[in-house]
Length: 424
Ligand code: AMP
Ligand code: GLY
Image (cartoon, rainbow, N blue to C red; front, side, top):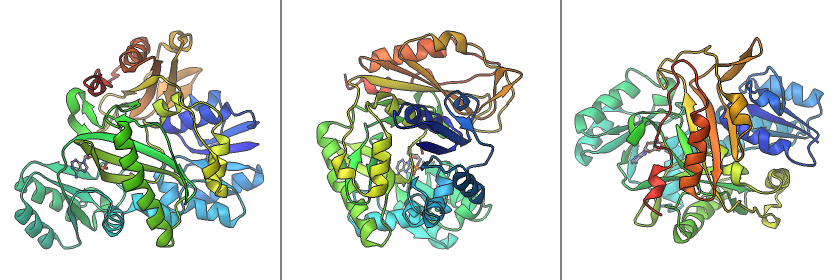
């Protein structure tokens, strides 16, 4: 069969890498992809948001399955468009993806279906938002309602900071239209985890747990990024916590979405805060996490295609996934300046050495090829992923590879996976 993967980041490289291993896949395309992805797939120069361009390509090439990486094509309705043209596509429909596209909608769903989450209110009026902040006190969290590339959340230590954030979002519109409404939320404490599950709208098939590292600097300091590294499994997700996530969070939300006439098929990502063994939902995403997908798929055994197909056909209850009984750690190597304005076009060295290393895979995110050389072409450039018997060994493996790669201005965190060590 022929598969098209939509997107061009590290997550999409991991998807392409896994899909290309399927014995039933003859050819993989990726639109637009990146220089690293071109080693496993044919790149198609169509942007992930060019829905009609992608549809034309899929029709012309008779693509059997399309897999969508990023949120924007999902919230814009790529799944609805492909399905109405008779094409098979893996991902959440437009109405289902609203769970990610609107934080206010997501919170209403959590309230209605009794999912554990922080207290909150939604405001379209600046003054009412400010009154509520004064009443609640700090610390408190201010969120832009719409999509803001993972940056629309401001954690405020003081009431003044929270008021300032409301003004930035609603008046100065630093996140554009995403800031027409704000969600003001209780500040939750605990340890975070990312929990992804496949679903066909009825059954749920969890992926291995993972933990992201959102802040740019070691020790979770500095501004938030798209994610600077991740590991799997996340020891904070004990067997008991795992059960609570499935029973108190995933089942009710999937059932709730069906009841609302928004059947949810694809992959659902719950961002969780876990305190004393009790998970609360921070957010839902309607897609695979980036960089979580890189270490999670490194551990997944077997063929991913039958699972993706079962999510679409409604036969997921017959599927199961086996996981490598090892840990994996992904360290993101980023450009100087990221998550702010960053440099591009630097020549990357060291791939000859890392390509010879066992239990290591270097997933590309922002890379391009110029004159036969890999150059940096984005904020997050690489996701260097290592596999090991346990977390400390996987950390060691990933960083051994990281140390072999370099370019002018490279930055990465030195403490990916460290939080897992206190559980050992
Ligand atoms: P989100 O995009 O909603 O996941 O928020 C990004 C990050 O902000 C999360 O990964 C958390 O680290 C943090 N965050 C979001 N909401 C809360 C909250 N209610 N309490 C504490 N931290 C939060
Ligand atoms: N790693 C966070 C995200 O994919 O949203």
